Image 1 (cartoon, one colour):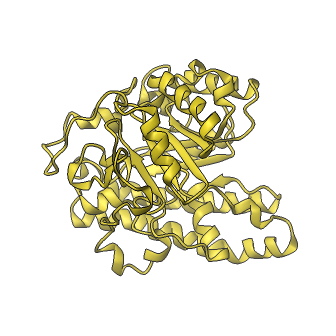
Image 2 (image 1 turned 30 degrees about the vertical axis):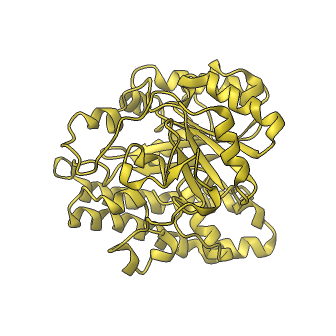
Length: 376
């Protein structure tokens, strides 16, 4: 079981596709309640809730907002587990700008660090603010120099007019000597999350994106022929299922193997549902983690789609609360259909490489529901 623990809804950045777009949003039909700026439950209450969970091992993902705005809380929770020993894996989803503020003995305990970065210097700073790329790459190098040896995942937000292939290559094989080379990347399309479809030209851009997906699939296969399986999570997760039959209910695990604990102690199916009272599943002070109600699932058009088994519905929140028109959602689904088609195209060659021992099954394994949602 994985729990997103939201340390704060606050953030120290105002990215174009998140905070920036929120200013233009109409009033939501959903009823949101304010969420406290920091946890108001006790550490004992949180640990008591986690300890009751029989679905071991337990993993915790620190999430926000920007979770590192509450470093003291992170340290206290990690320290409290020296006695409780309930949590096996610690993860963090961060924008990376404050990672240097967390002492290295805590950083080095993370199973995975997911850091928000959208490509090279120009792209990231345009999306996230001047100087962001420099801070993030510097902090990641510091973490490595301080002994962090585990996985660091670049978590991209992607929307037009970005040149997707060039941006992702800037993360894998940076041209800038000050860059940081990632072997793990997840990308998420900023689509059907805001009322912005009419302001965009998603259909025309998606044709370019699909071509880049084909190009990237060829590059991924070429690297595998060298014995190197890059951890490109949308590719990795789908190929894992194609090759080994790995089953998921939803790729992100929302409401099944992945739950979110809000600063007020309320429990929801996913972090995006923070503050939506009608989607709450309980409260850590009274709920049994083994009996959380299963009441949210994706609906049409996902459940009738030929790719539903591999896609899983993409995003529970946007499926339940679509903000794009049907034609826009169909265009978005077209990008997922294409990605799956490309994985099926190269699957026979990947299988041959496995049979020859050039690559191994373990190269496609990863911590399930690790905040890289697989489907972009």
